[in-house]
Length: 197
Image (tube, rainbow, N blue to C red; front, side, top):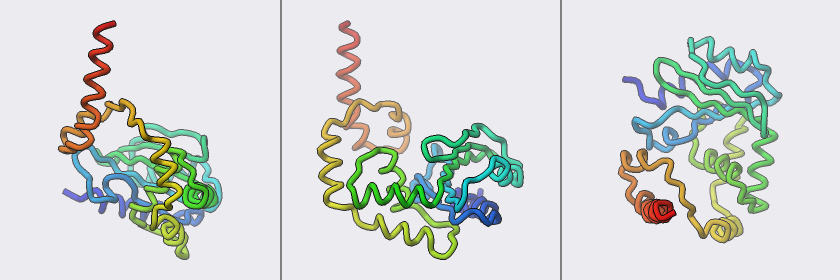
């Protein structure tokens, strides 16, 4: 069976045919080598100019993909999800100028916005599958070190872990005992409180 990384590389080759695309980055668990039975392929596509819908459809059609979701531009992103031979692809498209601004906010201004943090982490841990003229490599350089001011802001803002329990099955399957043990006491206490009401 073909690895998810190889499938991602093949899909990046399809995307790079469009001259408006400046780069393709593999993100998520596959980019970190953590892929398992819960994993899909997350690709970030970086455009020099806004894509038209037909340009977003074209790669999917070329590989006979089955569209699950196809979202219009909102919150600085175009997004689509599709299946190719049983493998799910999650595509997030951004303008290069948008990602430059996001990384500026995170790295230089210590902005703790969760979505910005996810994009910065994608760059830090992501694998460049295609780029023009070092575009993505230069952006990756921006996030090689975690700024001290951002560390302080993140700790202050997130002292309370909350009660996110949605991914407990994935945590158990992956044997991520640390996260499971962090969330279990909170979940158990919330259930007890709910039962009393």
